[in-house]
Image (cartoon, rainbow over all chains, first blue to last red; front, side, top):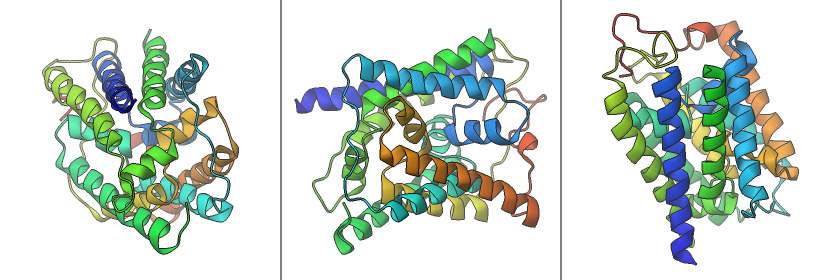
Length: 140
Length: 158
């Protein structure tokens, strides 16, 4: 059970890396989700971001349709806290010009120091935040 | 053709996110919660993805141009500036609270529950807020169309 669990994580990671590889090799684009969303929202270059994000949703839908486990929502998670988190993620990744995919997967892939700093920063802050939220405030 | 590639790479990315467990907040927060019952599986996701990109990008950056486009469109920005650090801190806060980063939040539209309908609009509002603030106060120096300037002279992605 645990083995297939980690195998799935590794398979998923390799697929994400393969996707970023194909997009850069064929189209010359970086598979950074936050930049692709911003591009869809605020630029005239809308078609390929829309198609990529459509594919993103469809790809997840195929996995769930094939019997992959879909996430179960938390029952008692405060709505205001989830809203605040959403705004922070949107604003933060726009300001940093990259998220887990843009800085994490692609930036580290091209050995960018800037992306390494970003990745270490959001990972560290993420660890500390989860500790505070879960263990000091008891929100699960 | 390049639009079909965008769709297909999106498909692969979305399937990868879903199978990896990144759309499950209990797995993501289980990784970030080192003081709890630590779940290391995100290391496999990131390790697998970066393992592939480090290798493939090394070869791709030697090519004169992408197969289906004129130039590589990759940022030239290299400096570690305040927006990068502040933005990453804010993102880390939101990620650590919720367990969602942008990719999984969008992929979850495939299996929507109440959390998606709260988080996703809030995230999009965050993007809009940044756009508004950066235009009004020029917090960042670029406008969106210049966000990833091309490199006609130096066709690499580094």
